[in-house]
Length: 215
Image 1 (cartoon, rainbow, N blue to C red):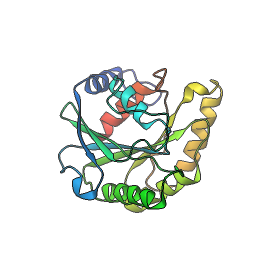
Image 2: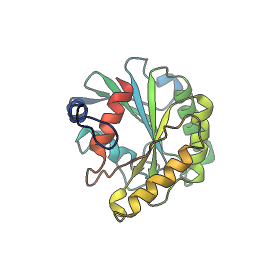
Image 3: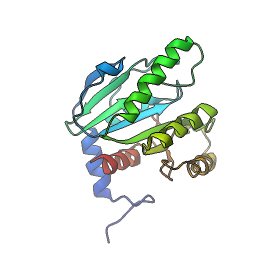
């Protein structure tokens, strides 16, 4: 039997995922309207989460780059759906952040409508990573998003971000709390994955999960 880590992944699977995410990663399109969404081409993995949860930082960490996805300290920075072509095998999709109050209601509704149209209309969408700040846990706006994904029958998985801010003993508690929420939702993957874009913690495991899910 091959050696496997705690999540059941072999070293070969971890290495194959590393090579995939180390490959060319090019910006394909930024869609601000439903009409501007790119055509169906490759399997897709999307990243959703509250504004400033660290979506763009996570995409950068996964690909080992600093500026594939632009980051900002100002919530609400991502105002369109950004598509990145990973080695001609997979699209990484950065969705606009939700839960940010300091924009107009009409702007928030526009973003929500765009995201909903994308999530319901992409047969190549294999997994949505719902990012949760590990310091704060699942918020009401996260639960609303999860309910929407349940209704759309879109598979999703909780990914905890910013675990470098937690004490080591606090990480298992954050995972357990997130997984307890996931069990309440029909389309949610039961396992929550802890990560840190700053230290690289959990990044290799998330790469392997996404590769196995999408390819």
